[in-house]
Length: 170
Length: 170
DNA sequence: CGCGATACGTCAGCCTTGTTGACATGCCTG
DNA sequence: CAGGCATGTCAACAAGGCTGACGTATCGCG
Image (cartoon, rainbow over the protein chains, first blue to last red):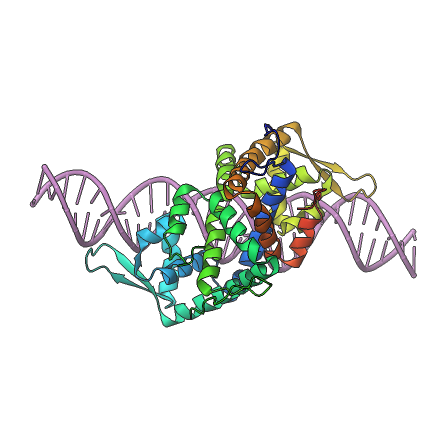
């Protein structure tokens, strides 16, 4: 069970008690609830769910992406995604166009209405993130990001890092 | 759009671009996936889901807690919780005993088998947390916790803080 | 004592969102 | 051109949220 290091010499060898780790675990649990609370509220009013949010978010970030791309970033089955996409398309928030290079592919983009919902959702989520960053202070942000990044599965980390990198690095 | 930080003076006024915030948002998304991946695997093998994990975790943390307590920390309806609890009790992982002070209440505890599963789950999750902490370095941990805490809804933060506090503070 | 409030369990039914299986279509290579 | 693979769609099912309604036991108070 608790095989641990000898002395906390602060280098790269941290002393981590089970209690400290449990605190971190519960912090993730409770924080994620807060993290999704605002968008969930907005989505609920419009009859959508978290899955719609995820699709909208990543289509916004990578306009013209294919269903397969989206699948691998979201990590769900294509059938699951497809149901969500179908409603978004039917409701006129997303358009799917046949690929020109490869006509099996569908390229996904937000319509103006889709972009508007995206804005509402991400405004809410950004506001919370901004407040949290400000409350925690400048030094905390780097640590936050570093731990989260280290917590991802390698493939997810690659996905994450492949996004637009800030010029000034994290 | 991209108003950028001219001088980061690090006091309490952070300049936060939309891109930086979006990075944080996606970090939460991808990290949470990693965070739940290991327990999900274990649970899947035994025919349980994430809901069972949550119940087991909090019963373990507060042995003898009542159904109502659990309800408010988990933030679900009693019907939802009850379904999970019923299977856990039927499978002999949890016992429910009538309260002595107030006999309407049911006090929940893990059986030996329940504690064993809890151990397997939290060992996996702690291992990931520990690795992430170590990879991110000593300074990152405080920042990680601070941002997460600031991201919670106030009631959730209260729940979170009401747990065993580390003597040495965070 | 009697009555309302509280704690818990349960049934029924709905929704979102995950899953697998079957299938249509398009590309590409032997 | 034929078969195989990739891409995406449709159908059906399960988990786990939710609301609403109800039953039962118990507590506490007037």
